[in-house]
Amino acid sequence: MGIQLTVEPIEETLDVADGQTLLDACLRAGVWLPHACGHGLCGTCKVEVLDGEVDHGAASPFALMDFERDDGFTLACSATATVDVTIEADIDEEPDAVVRQVRDFDGVVSRIEHLTPDIVGIWIKTGEPVEFQAGQYLNLHVPGVERPRAFSFANSPSTADEVELHIRLVPDGEATPKLRHDLQVGDRLTFSGPYGRFFVRRSHDKPMLFLAGGSGLSSPKSMVVDLLETGCDQPITLIHGVRTAADVYFDDTFRSLEAEHPNFTYVPALSQPDDAPWDGETGFVHEVAERRFDGSFKGLSAYLCGPPVMIEACIRSLMKGRLFERDIFTERFVTEADGESAKSPLFKRL
Ligand SMILES: Cc1cc2nc3c(=O)[nH]c(=O)nc-3n(C[C@H](O)[C@H](O)[C@H](O)COP(=O)(O)OP(=O)(O)OC[C@H]3O[C@@H](n4cnc5c(N)ncnc54)[C@H](O)[C@@H]3O)c2cc1C
Image 1 (cartoon, rainbow, N blue to C red):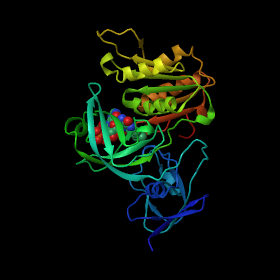
Image 2 (cartoon, rainbow, N blue to C red):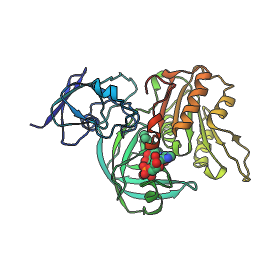
Image 3 (cartoon, helix red, strand yellow):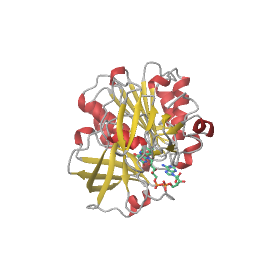
Image 4 (cartoon, rainbow, N blue to C red):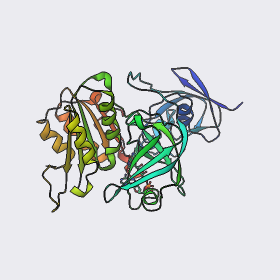
C-alpha cells in the first residue's frame, strides 16, 4: 500500500504518490485545503502535522518560520511525505465555494493577441470543458521551463472549452518571455487546475468593487462577465489601473458591457499618463477608488487582483474607508521576489 494522508478535522484519508505535495494530493482527491501561491511563498496553506513526518520542500523561511517547523507546522503546497501522515487544516466552510477536483488538461493554442506592449492574450482550445469558478487560476506548463507558472482564467466559465489568459511579460523571467516571443498558434500546452479561492461571494449580496492592476484584469474580467451573464442586480464597479493609455486593454469589451448593463461601471485609470490623448481617470487604483467612493467603502464587497504592492495600497484605502477583512478578497500575483512580504501585514490571515 502507498503512503496515506489523513486530513483532520474532516477525517478524510487519501493516497499520496511519491514526491507529490500534500496539497496536490488533496486537491486532486477533491479535498479542499486553503492555498494561494502554490510555491511555498505565502503561507496560506499552513497545516499542523499531528502524526508522521514530512519533508518541508521549498517552503520559504519567511512563510514557514523555524519555530513553526519546530512546533510541527508545514506548508501543504511544498511538503511531501515518505510515511503515513495526519494533518490538521483550518478548513472554513464557504457557502459560495464550488469544490472541483484539480485535473490535468491539454489543449491547442487557438489565438494569440498582443493586448498591450507587455501583455499577451493567449487562448487555448481544450478538447473538453475546463470547469472552474470565475476568479480561479491554473498552473501552466511552459515548454522548457521546469516548474509550472500560475495564470488566472480570464474567460468566463460559460466558455469553458477555450481558456483565455492575460500574460504580462516579466523581462528577466524564464517562462513569460517564451510565451510572449516563441509561442505559436497550433502549439500544444498542458496545465492543471482549477486552483484558488478568489471567487465572488454571491451570498453576501452587496455592491461589488473590483480593483485590478495591469494583467490583474484577468480574474476580474472572468468574474464580472460571469456575474453579468448569469444575472446580478447589485451595482458592480471595476477600476483597472495601468500606467499609460497604451496599457489599457479590453476597453471596448467593458464599455459595451457598461452600455448593456446599467448596474456596471467601468473605470480605466492611468498612473503615468504620457502625451497620448486621455480624458479618463488618472492616479493609482486606490486613489481613484477613494475619489469615486468619497473615501467611504462601507457596505461593499471588494475583490483585488494584481501585484502585491497594489493590493497593499488598496487594502489600506479600503480599511481607512471602513471596509474590513471579511469583505475584502484578494488574488496577489506573488513571485519569489515577494516571498518575504507575501502575507499582508494588514490582515491577520490570508
Ligand atoms: C495565483 C496567481 C495568479 C496569477 N495570475 C496571473 C495572470 O493572470 N497574469 C499574469 O500576467 N501573471 C499572473 N501571475 C503572475 C505570474 O505567475 C508570474 O508573473 C509568472 O509566473 C512569471 O514567470 P516567469 O518564469 O516569467 O518569471 P520567473 O522566472 O519566475 O521570475 C524571474 C524574476 O522576475 C520576478 N518576477 C516574476 N514574476 C513577476 C511579476 N509578476 N512581477 C514582478 N516580478 C516578477 C521573480 O521574482 C524573479 O526575480 C499570477 C500569480 C499567481 C500566484
